[in-house]
Image 1 (spheres, one colour):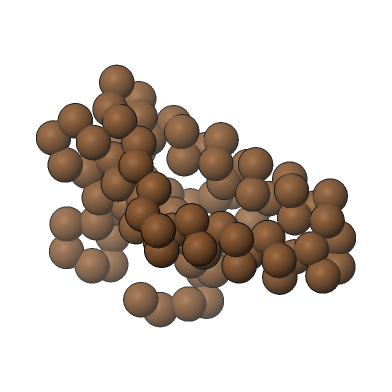
Image 2 (cartoon, rainbow, N blue to C red; image 1 turned 90 degrees about the vertical axis):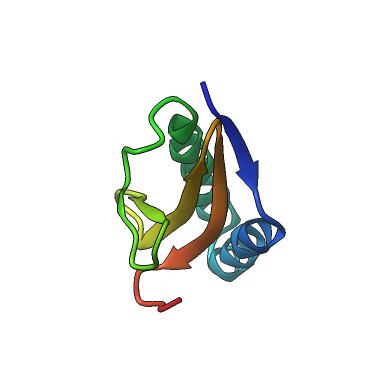
Length: 91
């Protein structure tokens, strides 16, 4: 099992996503954030389950039924979540 680390930027992304969705519905915002976190936890066990990333040395986990993508990097025994992006965003 790999260690899962969240960068400050990725945690800020989660916060921004929550507040944006919560403008319409707090329960939906909570569910979306919980779903992103739960699926991201799977990276501890299967770090290469996401597709190859658009940037070198990154991978991308698509969060099904949402427009969000978890951008991460695998380093030895650690998976580092770099960003959480809306699929329309470029990075």
